[in-house]
Length: 113
Image (cartoon, rainbow, N blue to C red):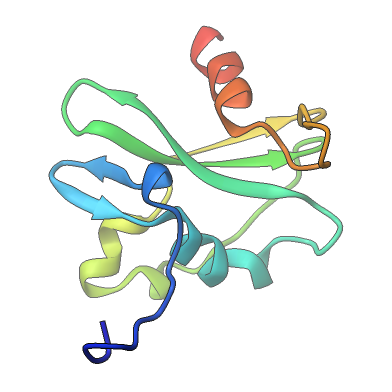
């Protein structure tokens, strides 16, 4: 909230990740790391169950694995909780009729493996 009548739209409520009691917006992380991922690669931030944290932040990238370096410096201070704990490469994202990838279906594939 900026004021009584003004706010900044950060992301969708149903995408919020609760990792160790910290509420994390995947859209904020995606914006921060987008410049480190080749522009032709589709990716998204999500979470998978974790015994200690409840949910842990993960990065999912479409395509074959490649070397990826995201500087630790962008995850300073409170942002340290936003750093993906794992990176998964999926050969092809499942899309819906609007050409948007189906996050939940992709995550289910990751959890099964």
